[in-house]
Image: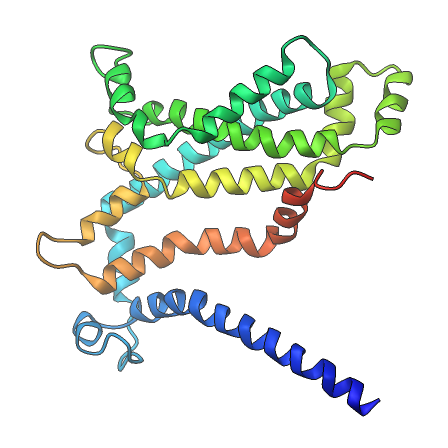
Length: 280
């Protein structure tokens, strides 16, 4: 018994040592950022890797008082919420049709959506700049200019994940709902959506994080006074230097909602990504 325990103890310790190493590598930047947000600029410049000599709250207060940062926070929250809601709604409808409905050209149309995942998003910056500018739709400069690209580029991966979840639903349960008088819309609304909550949560979280952190499209398509959070963070950077403490304080405020989402939804993320991976 002792020999068997020792034989299992060595792999157990090795696995946990490797996991601890990965945890240290991934958690250290967050810890350093949080510590830097509560120290003075001089202390951060002189001792970047040390603990704060004096804990201060003025950095967070100064960031909150910044007019651009507050408006950018509201812009990002409003834009991401609306774009995610639209993208998930459209993706859920399309994914259910591809998974459960039979119509001519469904396979080819699904592959056409997947082709969107192969297109680098940034190669569309120049065409979108011309399409949304004064020579095209004339909406460049406002938040509505970002809604279309955000929703469009979110659809391929969203449809792929949700299609797998809808295809994995028990056929007997779907047939029973049809026998009870449910139409295709009724099956989708009352059966498919409730059973696919993990996949829906995955799509919502993934798209929200992607849009929340997006920089290139916002930099190209937004006008003055309509910044989002990634653009607002650049106000703490000068031409020749950067305010480390203010930048860290701003990043702490930006990251807190994302960490909360991950803590409460990590199980849904795993279940949603593995939904439909194995057929019973």
